[in-house]
Image (cartoon, rainbow, N blue to C red):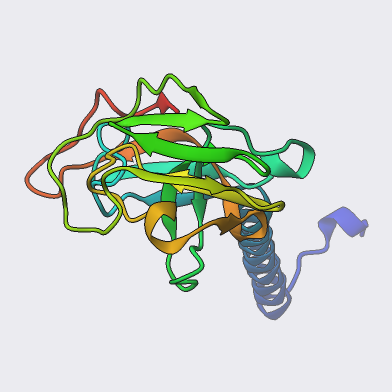
Length: 203
């Protein structure tokens, strides 16, 4: 009788089936572990999501906007004026803030009559609004102040409703998580509330 004519016993067939099922489970767990490791790597070293909780960056960012932050961009490039970044501020190192870079190391910053001057020259800021005061100190004229080496001067776009470098001082570059580059989701917080016109907006 040839080998092809030999049939496995019920016990052997059950053992083969169990082995096959075990192999399938192990393959599934391996795939899940790889996916989790990849997601953790991406979140830790490349991209990370953040949600906007306040109105300090209105009209550029609204409460309920969800951002993706590029965590690698400043490994190869220096921060630039106008970049929107997520960071840990010196006065609350356990919280994440989002503001715009206004002053670079060595520059002198002056705010007069709702116009920012850098090294004595007024800069164009199409993103900035100056509306009602929120009660933070220093929301009117400010400076001049010189930005130390290794530091940045940060401001919110909603200038009279932003707790920024005018309140808590300069930001150390090392405190930056990364540069915000896209709104991947936006929700008003009630009802359907999805702002579809903001989803996918580049910053």
